Image (cartoon, rainbow, N blue to C red):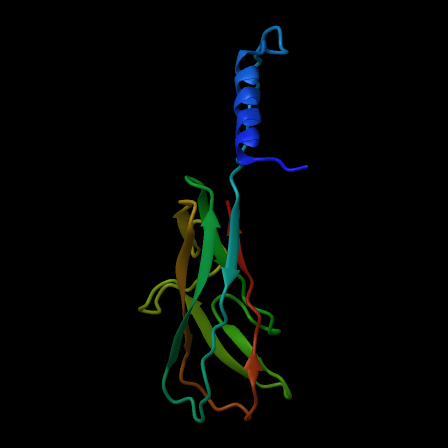
Length: 168
Protein backbone atom coordinates (compact mmCIF):
# COMPACT_ATOMS: atom_id res chain seq x y z
CA UNK A 1 0.00 0.00 0.00
CA UNK A 2 1.43 3.27 -1.13
CA UNK A 3 0.81 6.31 1.06
CA UNK A 4 1.38 9.68 -0.48
CA UNK A 5 2.70 12.75 1.26
CA UNK A 6 -0.57 14.58 0.63
CA UNK A 7 -2.58 11.87 2.43
CA UNK A 8 -0.24 11.92 5.44
CA UNK A 9 -0.41 15.71 5.62
CA UNK A 10 -4.22 15.67 5.38
CA UNK A 11 -4.53 13.12 8.20
CA UNK A 12 -2.17 15.20 10.38
CA UNK A 13 -4.15 18.41 9.78
CA UNK A 14 -7.48 16.72 10.50
CA UNK A 15 -6.14 15.10 13.69
CA UNK A 16 -4.81 18.41 14.96
CA UNK A 17 -8.11 20.12 14.20
CA UNK A 18 -10.07 17.41 15.99
CA UNK A 19 -7.88 17.67 19.08
CA UNK A 20 -8.21 21.43 19.25
CA UNK A 21 -12.00 21.30 19.39
CA UNK A 22 -12.27 18.18 21.54
CA UNK A 23 -13.56 18.95 25.03
CA UNK A 24 -11.06 18.49 27.89
CA UNK A 25 -11.28 15.19 29.71
CA UNK A 26 -10.94 17.10 33.03
CA UNK A 27 -13.96 18.70 34.62
CA UNK A 28 -11.87 21.33 36.41
CA UNK A 29 -8.70 21.93 38.38
CA UNK A 30 -7.86 22.59 42.02
CA UNK A 31 -4.55 23.70 43.52
CA UNK A 32 -2.81 23.25 46.82
CA UNK A 33 0.33 24.83 48.17
CA UNK A 34 3.02 23.25 50.29
CA UNK A 35 5.93 24.68 52.20
CA UNK A 36 9.53 23.82 51.42
CA UNK A 37 12.03 24.38 54.21
CA UNK A 38 15.60 23.77 55.27
CA UNK A 39 17.18 24.57 58.62
CA UNK A 40 20.82 25.57 58.39
CA UNK A 41 22.61 25.16 61.70
CA UNK A 42 25.78 26.90 62.75
CA UNK A 43 28.54 24.64 61.48
CA UNK A 44 32.23 24.72 60.62
CA UNK A 45 34.80 22.54 58.89
CA UNK A 46 38.57 22.77 59.15
CA UNK A 47 41.45 21.39 57.10
CA UNK A 48 45.20 21.77 57.47
CA UNK A 49 48.29 21.67 55.29
CA UNK A 50 51.61 20.23 56.52
CA UNK A 51 54.33 22.46 57.94
CA UNK A 52 57.79 21.44 56.71
CA UNK A 53 60.88 23.17 58.07
CA UNK A 54 62.96 21.52 55.34
CA UNK A 55 66.41 19.98 55.73
CA UNK A 56 69.21 21.57 57.73
CA UNK A 57 72.53 20.81 59.35
CA UNK A 58 73.53 22.97 62.31
CA UNK A 59 70.57 24.88 63.75
CA UNK A 60 72.43 28.11 64.54
CA UNK A 61 69.71 30.47 63.20
CA UNK A 62 65.93 30.55 63.38
CA UNK A 63 64.22 28.38 60.78
CA UNK A 64 60.92 30.06 59.87
CA UNK A 65 58.16 28.52 57.75
CA UNK A 66 54.42 28.96 57.30
CA UNK A 67 51.47 26.77 56.50
CA UNK A 68 47.76 27.39 56.35
CA UNK A 69 44.48 26.18 57.76
CA UNK A 70 41.19 26.49 55.89
CA UNK A 71 38.13 27.20 58.03
CA UNK A 72 34.68 27.15 56.45
CA UNK A 73 31.77 28.21 58.65
CA UNK A 74 28.18 29.14 57.95
CA UNK A 75 27.68 32.88 57.46
CA UNK A 76 27.72 34.86 60.68
CA UNK A 77 29.02 31.98 62.81
CA UNK A 78 31.74 33.14 65.24
CA UNK A 79 34.58 30.65 65.69
CA UNK A 80 37.92 30.11 67.41
CA UNK A 81 40.82 27.99 66.16
CA UNK A 82 43.08 26.31 68.72
CA UNK A 83 46.29 24.32 68.24
CA UNK A 84 47.34 21.67 70.73
CA UNK A 85 50.92 21.08 71.92
CA UNK A 86 51.57 18.29 69.42
CA UNK A 87 52.16 14.58 69.74
CA UNK A 88 55.78 14.51 70.95
CA UNK A 89 56.11 13.48 74.59
CA UNK A 90 57.03 16.45 76.75
CA UNK A 91 55.52 19.07 74.43
CA UNK A 92 53.52 21.94 75.84
CA UNK A 93 52.10 25.08 74.24
CA UNK A 94 55.08 27.26 75.19
CA UNK A 95 57.68 24.63 74.23
CA UNK A 96 56.59 22.33 71.41
CA UNK A 97 58.87 19.45 70.46
CA UNK A 98 59.63 17.48 67.33
CA UNK A 99 60.61 13.89 68.17
CA UNK A 100 63.27 11.93 66.29
CA UNK A 101 61.93 8.92 64.40
CA UNK A 102 64.87 6.65 65.28
CA UNK A 103 66.17 8.06 68.54
CA UNK A 104 65.07 9.89 71.65
CA UNK A 105 66.36 13.36 70.72
CA UNK A 106 63.96 16.26 70.24
CA UNK A 107 64.01 19.60 68.44
CA UNK A 108 62.27 22.61 69.99
CA UNK A 109 59.87 24.62 67.82
CA UNK A 110 56.75 26.69 68.19
CA UNK A 111 53.69 27.91 66.32
CA UNK A 112 52.54 31.52 66.24
CA UNK A 113 49.52 33.60 65.29
CA UNK A 114 51.64 36.46 63.94
CA UNK A 115 54.45 36.94 61.42
CA UNK A 116 56.64 38.51 64.13
CA UNK A 117 56.63 35.21 66.05
CA UNK A 118 55.56 36.91 69.29
CA UNK A 119 52.06 35.45 69.83
CA UNK A 120 52.25 31.72 70.58
CA UNK A 121 49.22 29.85 69.22
CA UNK A 122 47.61 27.67 71.86
CA UNK A 123 44.21 26.49 72.96
CA UNK A 124 43.00 28.89 75.65
CA UNK A 125 39.85 30.73 74.49
CA UNK A 126 40.18 34.47 74.88
CA UNK A 127 43.94 34.23 75.25
CA UNK A 128 46.01 32.48 72.59
CA UNK A 129 43.62 31.28 69.88
CA UNK A 130 42.63 32.81 66.54
CA UNK A 131 39.07 34.11 66.22
CA UNK A 132 36.90 34.85 63.22
CA UNK A 133 33.39 34.92 61.82
CA UNK A 134 32.25 32.60 59.07
CA UNK A 135 31.26 34.01 55.69
CA UNK A 136 30.20 30.75 54.03
CA UNK A 137 33.50 30.40 52.15
CA UNK A 138 36.81 28.81 53.11
CA UNK A 139 38.89 31.33 55.05
CA UNK A 140 42.65 30.82 54.96
CA UNK A 141 44.49 31.27 58.25
CA UNK A 142 48.29 31.37 58.29
CA UNK A 143 50.24 29.39 60.88
CA UNK A 144 53.74 30.78 61.48
CA UNK A 145 56.31 28.21 62.61
CA UNK A 146 59.78 28.70 64.02
CA UNK A 147 62.59 26.35 65.00
CA UNK A 148 64.90 28.54 67.12
CA UNK A 149 68.68 28.20 67.16
CA UNK A 150 69.53 25.36 69.56
CA UNK A 151 72.01 22.66 70.53
CA UNK A 152 72.36 20.07 67.81
CA UNK A 153 70.38 16.87 68.07
CA UNK A 154 71.35 13.61 66.37
CA UNK A 155 70.90 13.47 62.60
CA UNK A 156 67.36 12.12 62.15
CA UNK A 157 63.92 13.06 60.86
CA UNK A 158 61.92 14.89 63.52
CA UNK A 159 58.12 14.97 63.54
CA UNK A 160 55.06 15.87 65.55
CA UNK A 161 51.36 15.85 64.83
CA UNK A 162 49.46 18.97 65.87
CA UNK A 163 45.68 18.99 66.13
CA UNK A 164 43.87 22.13 64.96
CA UNK A 165 40.38 22.48 66.44
CA UNK A 166 37.66 24.89 65.37
CA UNK A 167 35.06 25.71 68.04
CA UNK A 168 31.83 27.51 67.13
